[in-house]
Length: 385
Ligand code: FAD
Ligand code: NA
Image (tube, rainbow, N blue to C red; front, top):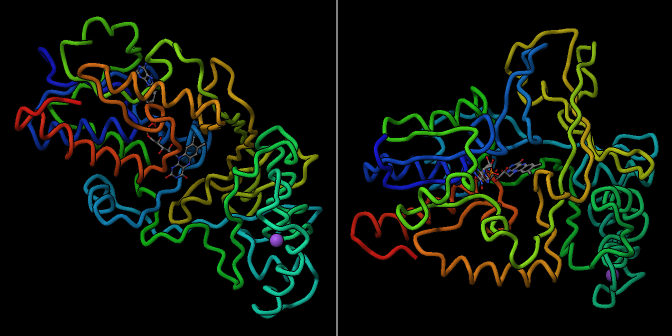
């Protein structure tokens, strides 16, 4: 490629959507810089070498959306299985079906309830605390679902997720704790749901497969920034604080540690995801990846499981979930001001905006940036801001 028309930093769903649209719709030459050894960002997956089972390397990724535009767009690159996500949760030696539903309530209280009886029971238990008076996460949760369900299904899990006692966490972290007064245990309620038939990496590679798109791997933007800054429009999807040399301080993130192992059994846990609600079990969940693709003929006698542990991210950890304290929000406002003033650079994606974005949201937001900013700039000469 001679001089690119656009440089995209990061090859996750946001960056690849931008690159694909600009190449296909506007005929631009796009250079994508990616510091990892592979494209695809956090949705990247690969076949486990011993078993061939597809493992989502940065944590399990379930695709779901109700956005018609996004659904139409993603189907250009892959078809989807009819997988429907369901999650189970261990607590005190029992396994329950999540999210909290009538099945869980009946099992937990050891007695059958009609939907109305269950509603009355939970609302009686929740009356212990008025939501408006809740001063921390624990009180807020009790005010919403009562103490028994809180102590079993929220307390230990939340403490492990945040490495913090829920009485020390802000009540703002939760707004609602939905309880379903029926037996519906589908995890998502979007119109479309499924997993890419040939896996995430095939999908992501298809997006980048265009003669005008070059993906340069193992290339950190900051090592080559001077070559492009101010000369070529840039869409930057790395961490916004890193772009500005952390001048306003570091934004805080949670990360997860993922420990994969092969077990010599056909089936380790009988489902894709098992949450561990007991506080004395150190991991938050176990993923068993063969269950994401029941339609595939995988090896028997072996299965891949991944223990997930949650903790605060240190400087060199992968940033996964924004913590979003009041302090973070203040810093973010200052970074947004700097970003607005940065000439010829647009910031996007989950790291560039410091927002947790599901895949369909990252793709949707990239489609919007393309239509509202990049197309007007390249097709009509509008300034890039
Ligand atoms: P990313 O995928 O993070 O891509 C950013 C890319 O930029 C990375 O590849 C990074 O290496 C690169 N980069 C950063 N800085 C530089 C630099 N200086 N130079 C070069 N390259 C750089 N979404 C769902 O819809 N369903 C799920 O079930 C789901 N599960 C998730 C589980 C976990 C643990 C996490 C963390 C996220 C999950 N997501 C899920 C969200 C999903 O990962 C994001 O929507 C998606 O990754 C967003 O894409 P992105 O392009 O914004 O960011
Ligand atoms: Na209440």
